[in-house]
Image 1: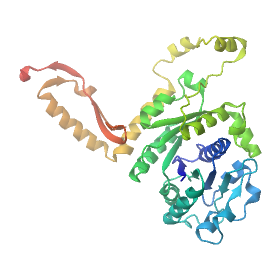
Image 2: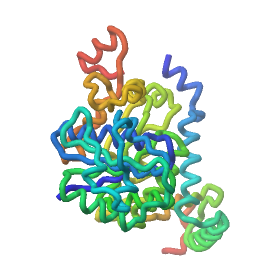
Image 3: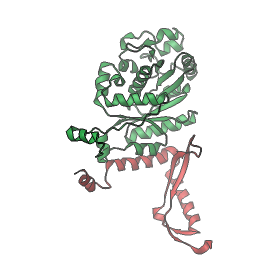
Image 4: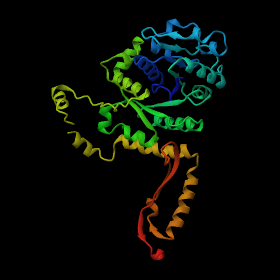
Amino acid sequence: MGEVLVITSGKGGVGKTTTTANIGTGLSLLNKKVVMIDTDIGLRNLDVVMGLENRIVYDLVDVVEERCRIKQALIKDKRFDGLYLLPASQTKDKNAVKPEQMLKLCNQLKEDYDYVLIDCPAGIEQGFKNAIIGADRALVITTPEVSAVRDADRIIGLLEANDIRNPLLIINRIRVDMVKKGDMMDIDDIIDILAIDLLGVVPDDENIIISTNRGEPVVTDMKSMAGQAYRNITRRIIGEQVPIMDLEIEKGFVGRLKKLFGIKA
Amino acid sequence: MLDLFKFFNRGNNSKEVARDRLKLVLVHDRANVSPQFLEMLKGEIIKVISNYMEIQTDELDIQLTRTKSDDGEHVVPALVANIPIKNMKNVGK
């Protein structure tokens, strides 16, 4: 029996889809069987982030309305075995899916997969309710901005109200240079305010944009910091103890020397 | 250099501003109560505590926030009040 994880944030544009793609790919790197569901009907994007946009035949609405079998709608990833995508519908009405249909789908999928990842739409309406109904655990994504943390707080409250206990926090797009200058809230500030456990921190990294341009999740890029951050997050999801990584990049010769001798600036 | 920069910027970091604004806005978001409600509560608390000790009423800070429950399992709402005491009255003795 697998586990259903919903990736949610409240606010749009904080990185839900990118996070879903990277965690999904990261889990399959760890040999887990994974299916990702895009529940953002009308504004689907997980397909392009995964580079699978040309392979879509059926979608989520077709599945719940039983126009096709689940297996027919699942798109197999181009690189990894055991990684599948169920795309959202781009043209149908965004209220086409009902919570009880989503619940049934989640329960069916977790029979066959280790992890079912649900990419939640922004907002707190019907789409949000659909996305969380079948979830066993929730991952809340935020960035170090007032608006994103505020919306994350609201989402945490709504998850609790729907009996999804102990959501885990991912802080995305943190910039160490700005934190150091005192111009960005740091990890402790955000955890202190939201009062939930931290799953991971992803640095603001241009490699994410580069890899998304190509339709390849950054988690497969062994050299990038964001890739490392996502690999750590996936290992924590499967229950391994991995320390939060040091996001400090010491530039130049002196910096490397300092790092070599373990001197903190 | 960095420390010098910090020195001139002391108390004026944009992060501090962000954190304080966020905390304030969340008080209302979380509680779904009006500022008037909090003012009323504050007034009552001042009245009761003033019977026992002299407090600095202008410095009194009360907030609704969230905290982990005792068993660490749940997140529960909490009323946090910071009440500076000027002087203990002798009534308790």
